[in-house]
Image (cartoon, rainbow, N blue to C red; front, side, top):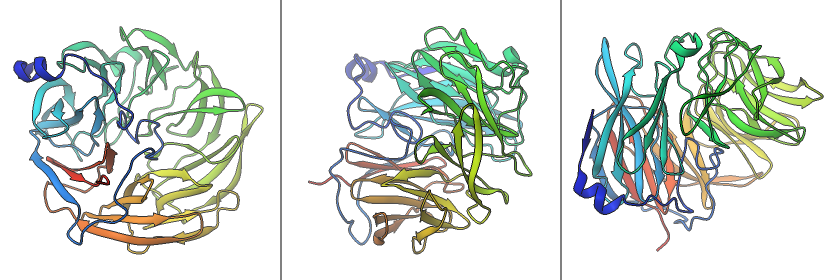
Length: 408
């Protein structure tokens, strides 16, 4: 079950301390794609920043690495299209050396079969949601499984065309999953035991690849997600549905997290011709403020930064005004790109050819500063760039590398 290199674990993992510059979950520690309090190079050398290390992981994945307490946690799976197993790997952040690896269960084995969800690290534990709906908790020090829940079996969940893909949201002693069962579209499990804390009674829609956000709307903390047919908000304390708004494209695929973009306003976007829209939530109801089908963000992410929305949609990476929906500018050369935003600029990782680019962004202007290409790894360039403690981590399939972008 586990392959532990005990000498490294005992020497290095006696106490896991989460540091200020860590990236502890998908989209960053604040789940918003915004990197703060990092002193980074304002530009990179012509061939790219210095590479600290590069490795080949045993398992393949689209998921991004997370960084906590000097260690990287990353998922990958192995096997063929009939039988795949998911693994969680722990690596030394300084060297890329694997210190332990452990199975988290059977994984998605059909089309696009690489591991699709990133871990979440909270209080010395690591939480993973697998492509077949298993929710698993591990001890971050040694990879020992603490508990596991087959959410589909337990809640009558139904899988979807390309497998479950929600990255675990953890808050207030709860871990959120979306099994899509009757009266259990969204479920909160106890972080210590995996026991049920609440279910979203009244919502029976299937999951739709969306990773939920914890947002405060109308003064109330809510779990907000895009399900099969609707954008929904449920009470973060008890899962009671608060509001919903129709939102469905032809495949019921919504792999972008809803983002607050003003007082009680949400930006939501889906691919396959649906486009983007801003919703305003008030009095238990949501209404559309504007929509634009040309901003068709498939799954590369959205951020709200300096009063602007940044979204990779319609084959572009654009900045636009959340009030009107009008484009302020598009970044030259960006096509279908994932990104994060740092104190020195936006770092984008393009699906087409693996270009990695640093772009200085302001509310009304932008300028491409530096660029290089990823030549390692296998499969699509779908993992998001991660910045932690002066290091840029880039993953492609089995390939993972660390680049020194911290200011000396």
